[in-house]
Length: 365
Ligand code: V47
Ligand code: SF4
Image (tube, rainbow, N blue to C red; front, side, top):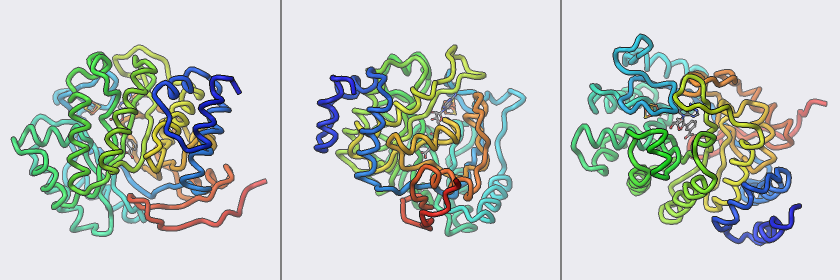
């Protein structure tokens, strides 16, 4: 182990909170195995040998978006040929498929449509709740919630309360990107500032809803801006405790306006491991297998990760930007992946209640 990592390891062993400098030292060390071992210790202290997954289905009702972030290959303008908006029937038929596959969660996010009224989203939630009462609806990034406040002129708490009343169960973690203003100016100048993303999440947590938090890395950001991003998340979490999982998202460059290569495996594992070590008040670190690929997602289970998301079924955002992973993973593949890593697969619901625990046998020779 590199000498500069020894004092950090002592802190990790003692359960002492790491500083921003510590996180930078970890990132800069490039000592993947040492950092991974520490992250594994930190993770196992919280989650033991359990690794979580969920039977879920992603639905993206529209790709039309007024923001047109430079890193986003998914969004389109209204007049482009590939622009789409699903009808309520199309959304319902996807939810029906999810129900047939025993999904416990619908994950619904989309673009900021210039003309769809807030009522469309309330209606969608009400209809889904009525037709599929046992399914948890995790929907809308903080960016969409802010947009609803803008188009209705309603205060944030009122928007959230109406969504909650209509059936919203929790929020995913998208739209966070990197909070630093200079990075946002370069990659998503039209998007709400990081400070507003945090304000929306604080209001969401105050309303009693849980959410996730993401960090988009591997574009123009510096390591300092990544640490600054995580610091703001850790501070908010200290105040609210409303975040469930931290999900670093690997930037995919294809069809985007950002000239950069794909992230490397070491970069991906480091983002997850440093996240586990720095965010001591987050219960879960999720490796979204769609973004890092199923094989690296499996390896990440030894680098601080305790959650590999779920069955997903239809993923448009990362695939539009060149993701090589498939779109769907069956429960038995998820279970095998976790078992082969020597961990115990646990199917969870959105709020991390156990749905099914899979016994720890069945490892292939
Ligand atoms: O906010 C957009 C990102 C996010 C690209 O909370 C890109 O459980 C990589 O947040 N390359 C949406 N990333 C997805 C998201 C998410 C996914 C899975 C689980 C959860 C959760 C949340 O996707 C956006 C943006 O940060 N994104 N374009 C791209 N080219
Ligand atoms: Fe719109 Fe979200 Fe894509 Fe940005 S990342 S252009 S807000 S859909």
